[in-house]
Picture 1: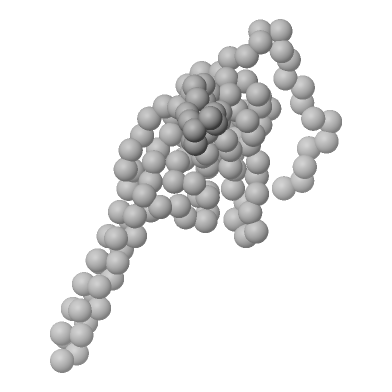
Picture 2 (picture 1 turned 180 degrees about the vertical axis):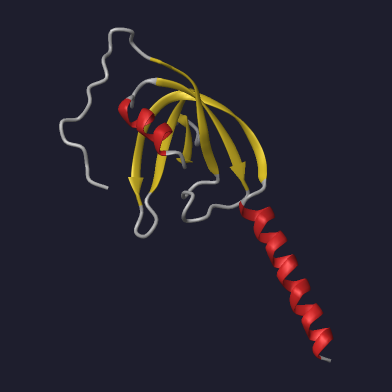
Length: 137
């Protein structure tokens, strides 16, 4: 009886681990989104994650007579990528992302995780100004 119970517990742990991996770590899809970076913020109660929104060109109609823009909400796990995005809000970006089936708190609030910046462009005369005060970690 003890051996049977051990096999059942091990099987349940393996199945549970495989489900957790499939749901939260397996990459369902990946691609590129382009648009103007609206904002990127670092927020969270326990896990501080970077959350952003990209406004894509084009329009979609929600209800008759209304126009809405396409929005891409995403999370960023790499602080260097997040810093680049924060310093260049309002510019146009091409962002590579990976899509997961579920969000986990320490990775971000979104199923879409931006893992690289493919291109960035804005007005050539724009200058990036570094803040005078750096927040403490």
